[in-house]
Length: 61
Image 1: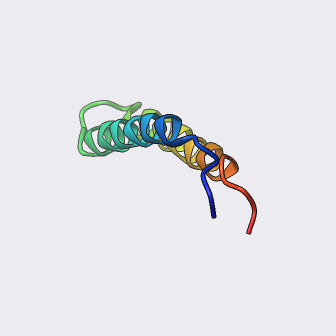
Image 2: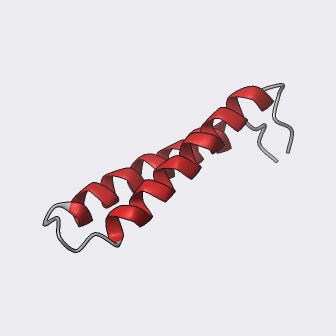
C-alpha cells in the first residue's frame, strides 16, 4: 500500500483520532453526566470515519 504523498494529511487525521479517542475515554469515565455515553459515541463515530478517510488515501492492493 502506498500513501500517494499524503503523509501530512494522514498524520493530521491520526492526531485528531487520538484526541477524539482520549475525549471519548474521558466521557466514558464520567458517570455524573447523563449524556456522556451519547457524546462519547459521537466522538468514536467521528474517529471511525477519519480511519475510513485515511484508508481511502491509499492505493488499493
